[in-house]
Length: 198
Image 1 (spheres, rainbow, N blue to C red):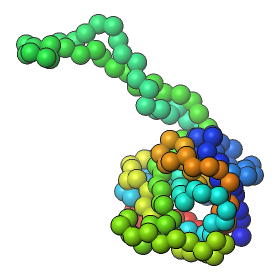
Image 2 (image 1 turned 90 degrees about the vertical axis):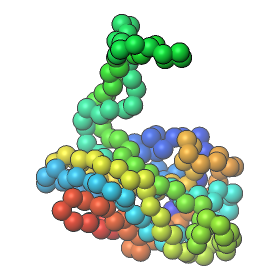
Image 3 (image 1 turned 30 degrees about the vertical axis):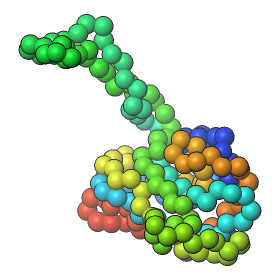
Image 4 (image 1 turned 135 degrees about the vertical axis):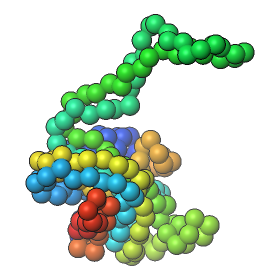
């Protein structure tokens, strides 16, 4: 059994840093370095055996992370100063736009996708079932679909936390979460066949 304590200050990106180090606010698991480029295409699924104790956060968050230094796009866009026009404009639309360039940054990791579950709604989004404190339950949920190539030499990481600062409510911290790794797994939709990571 492994445990962590929920917090609501650090972002998921900060919690995903340095996956090989112990962190009191998350659990992290890494694959061996990949021997070849590996493409993920579809919806990853996770199954977690966990218990909750104390605190108020009802969330379980899973991050799928690509660990390995690389030039990575981070969604920032730089717009040029000169507009480019495409034909005649109309009222409310000049027909012109500024060219944009996506920014890349060399970084040691990137969160590829993530998923969440409110454990009180583990059976259905329309049905609330409270947990018995300290009792272990099975939680299964999907991560957001994505298409991504993990390069040879990189490692696939799964990071478990409770509050995802940018995507869940930030309830008072302190919830203790215990996980049974032997009864927890991730199914990845890899091109050429699904893979199960335990």
